Structures are given as C-alpha cells and as structure tokens.
Image (cartoon, rainbow, N blue to C red):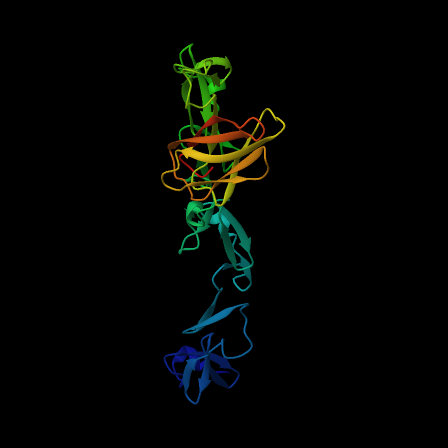
Length: 321
C-alpha cells in the first residue's frame, strides 16, 4: 500500500515548496510564479521572456502586472492599453482641446496664444506688433484690438481716421460768421471781412471804391481759406493764384507781400497770369498762417500800375492725416 509521505511528513520538501504524493514516492513543486533552482524556489521573472503586456511589464514576487504609457490606460483584460481622451476626462485646456493618440493638444481662440504651460491662453497684444496697426491710436482688447481717433475725427473702416465736418454736423458760429472746416476742427470767420475803406462786392471780395482814398492801397482784397494736414512732405504745390481779368498790354508779376517771415513759402510764377504757392518747410499744427499774395499789374501803354491782394488763410491741422 502506498505511503503518503506528504501527509505523514516523511518528505524532504522545503517550506517554500508544495509536496505532491505519487505512487511509491513524492515530488516537490514551487508555488505559481516561482521556479525551482536546485533545492530552492526562486521568483520567475515573467517580464524577461516574451512580454504579456502591450506597453510595460512590471515583475513582482511570484507574479507581474502591466502598465501603460502616459496617455493610455489598461483595458479590462489588464494587458491591452487603450487611448485616454484627456479632453473628456480632465478638460485640461482653457479654450480648445484636441485629443490625440496617447496625448492631446490645446489651441486658443483667435486673438490669444498658448502660455508656457501649453494649456492656458493669454491675450495677444496686437498693438505691440507695429505702430502702423492704427492711423492714430491702437487700443488692445481681450482677444483683439480696436483703433481710436482724436477729437475732431471719426473712425473710417477699422484703422483710418476721417475728419469730421463740424460745419455740416453742428457748430457754434454766429449768423454774421461763416463756418470753415479744417482737419481736426473748425473756425468761424466774418461773413463780411471788408474793413474801411474797402466795401464788399462779392463773397470774400473787398474793393476800394475811391481812387483818392485808396491811393497806395491794393485795389482789391480777396479772402481765401484752405486746410492742410500737419507735417506734409515738401516741396509741395498748395495754392494757385490766377488773374481773373486779362487785359492787353499788361504785365503781371506776383510776390508774397506778407506772412512769410519764416521762409515757409515760395511763389513760383508760371505765366503772365498765374503763379503757384509752394510750401518749402513742413508745417506742424494746429497753426494758422495768413499769407498775402500780391499781383501787380503794369500797363505798358498807359503807364498804369495797380495791385490786388489775395489773403490766404492756411490752417494746419494737428495731425498728419
């Protein structure tokens, strides 16, 4: 009759081994996850052979377990790794999240850029890109920017400034004054600019009626107004003066009689009846220049000489637009 050495204790198996009875003998075996080396049971490294894990295998005493790389998680079979949709699990992005295999990517709305943490979004200061973003002033806003214009101007489109014609939109000139619009503002000038001994014969035109009283004075004074932006490039032709009446046997000469003390202008005569006022120095505004342009007429037959004045008021706007 067979003797069960495992039951009677008549076996030689170690404490870390399991005894199995056989007919006429017995055998010693190691626990699962261990293998016998000589008389000892040592841990079997399951990760040393063909890997049972999709990504990483971690050996443990008598067993092992699988781990997945970042961005993946173990499937229900504890061996396979499946992608983690971080955009749904943790919502890591401040604005827009795009899931990728094993990872994710953050993007920001227009007008923002990713911060150093690659998840937060910070406003882009578009005004720092260039001084030409706006014609006058750039105002940074969250996610964008806007342009503003100075007083007397309104925004045209998105970046340009257009002069407001206060003479059309509303002004405070008196009834005996007329409104003159210029770049960035307006001014009120008398409707009748004529002073004794001159009398008004037409709009902006004053004539001296008496030759005795007006001896040595210009026969007529015509008032004109114009506006130019600040710091205009030079030289620039800005105003043409021309004789209204042309007589035979007359010679006309033109000159700047007053208002050019700083040498800002030059009068270029182009023909016997016209001349061009040229600006030779850039003018900064706001500023008003009153320039008297004189036309001297000489009759070669009658030996007669007369003169007339065109009083040009030049208003320089405060900005170069």
